[in-house]
Image (tube, rainbow over all chains, first blue to last red; front, top):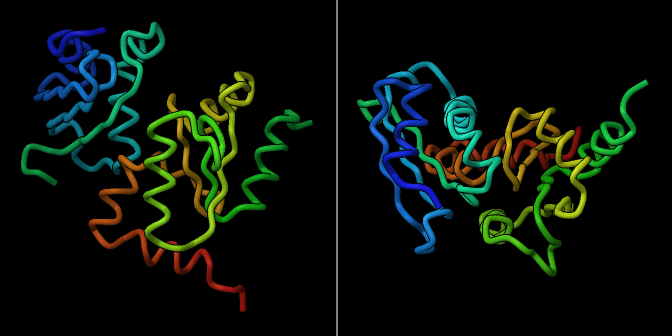
Length: 79
Length: 109
């Protein structure tokens, strides 16, 4: 189990300007949809954007606080 | 001498144009995202293979190192890594995926 704030803190360690929207997919707060909006994604393809988020959330993924993740990664102008 | 598991993976990648490493099998998937990936590819009508690595931590680790991608399922098209439906979905809506698949399944003339 993990809180949206903790996820946001982790993501901001890698993407300082990130806006992070967390949706609980199953009610157990460990199967999550995480939407990240950051200009740190500019010039990066989708794979690399998601890799950045996975790197940021490496710890809670490894220790099981997060069990499953659905990701979206956009820049502030939605591209 | 390449790692035997790497050789096994390279062989599997050559055998299957669309290859999904996931949890469970086609007939008994054991993860919602593996099912979702199957349903995603069912839209296109092209054949795909699911290789179950749920009980194979060593192979999962090699795959993770190879792709710098920590989660399953892992999708490969024509031996190229494409992440999962979080990546393939947006590619589809931008019209990039169908041409890629059509080309991948075109008989080599």
